[in-house]
Length: 352
Ligand code: ADP
Image (cartoon, rainbow, N blue to C red; front, side):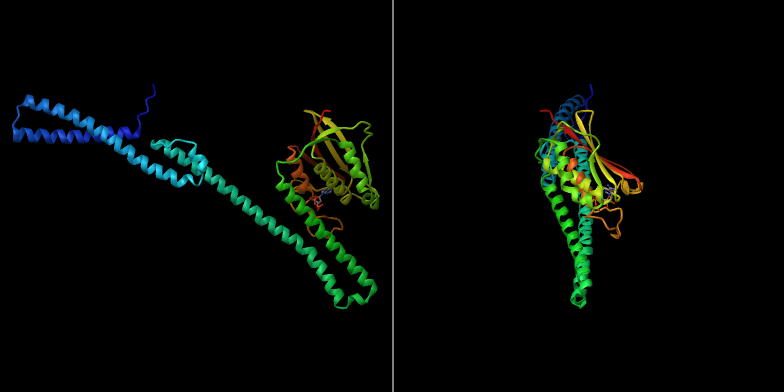
């Protein structure tokens, strides 16, 4: 049997022994010199006295120390429990020092983790705010620059006026992209975990996105198509509006970063575990290996200079990842620089 002798008992046993030795010794000296008891009687008196004093001292010490520790520990529990009432209210107050130490260690580790998470979040928030203001500043200053130049006299020249107004309009368009994407991200964060799922046909959703983006694709003579004819509907489970946004962002990117006369092809495959894999493949500019791992970060753009003619807010893929993860699904990317890119994501197959 594993008899775990509590530290407070040990303390009481040893302290009671000291008290007993001292008191019995003192009593024997007094009896011997002043009352002059016979040795036999002295032993009898000393024995009875030592047993009584030992039992009394033991109980008194045990009771007092438990009470003393309990009061202080209770105060300690009360003081710290407001920091994490869940942690402390779940367990009874212990007076066992080993148990208290381990509880405190667990509490300190939990708090350390919590503080680290909060610091990370704070760092992320600071970085995000910095990125937002930086991204908004560039197009705002562009618009301001063109308008100021026009007001300073350039508007008298018809050709320059048109050119500068068109450039200012491009800047405003960019501002709109960014604000709309930020709005989408904010809404996604608010509705996190509460997305409404329905069964819908992914083939007709993709066809709808193709129809919507046909004009944009035509401007670059890019052909939008399925890899083969899908005669029957393929039903999936998800949020129709959000999946439409995912497909739109991916197809839009394939046009933005596609080459003139190129193609975007979507393939729908049934894979294991009743999952459907949707693959969006283009033969555009592709992405260099070192940039692939960062593509889904907010505001990450391969060409940071903004010199490139195409480009949105840098939030498109972050939104895509957010939506797919909210569905508990996965997104994959594969790309070869100057050859093309493939973005694919999974969805749950629906049965009806
Ligand atoms: P952006 O608004 O800049 O398009 P995204 O988040 O949608 O932002 O994409 C991030 C970056 O990933 C883009 O700047 C682009 O460099 C790269 N990218 C995304 N899709 C493709 C693609 N189909 N082909 C090549 N590069 C792509």
